[in-house]
Amino acid sequence: MKTIKIRFTADFKYAGVRFLVMEAALKHQITGYIRKRAHHTYSVIATGRPEDIKAFSDFLKGGFLGSEIESYEVIPLNFQEHQTFEIQK
Picture 1 (cartoon, rainbow, N blue to C red):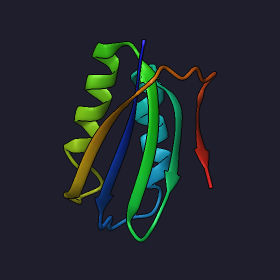
Picture 2: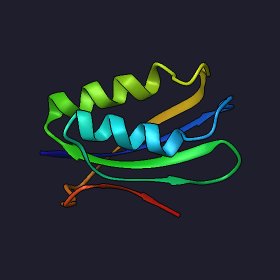
Picture 3: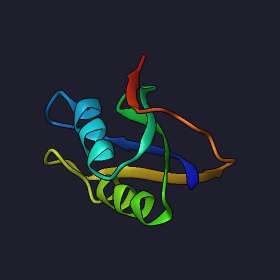
């Protein structure tokens, strides 16, 4: 298992970014959470098998909801265990 932190910024045209990320995490069997940070910036903690982490990360980096990702950073972390994927404030 592998844990990473992803920070990304994009000017999304639609609401529901966190729910879409949560749906993608569940599809890729990722546990962890997403938080909205500053204006248009999100922070994701993701734990899963390396191939699932890569697929999830590629999805996020590719942009979605009709927006391009303006900045994208992946930070490796020590393994963190989560039961599910959730949205945090």
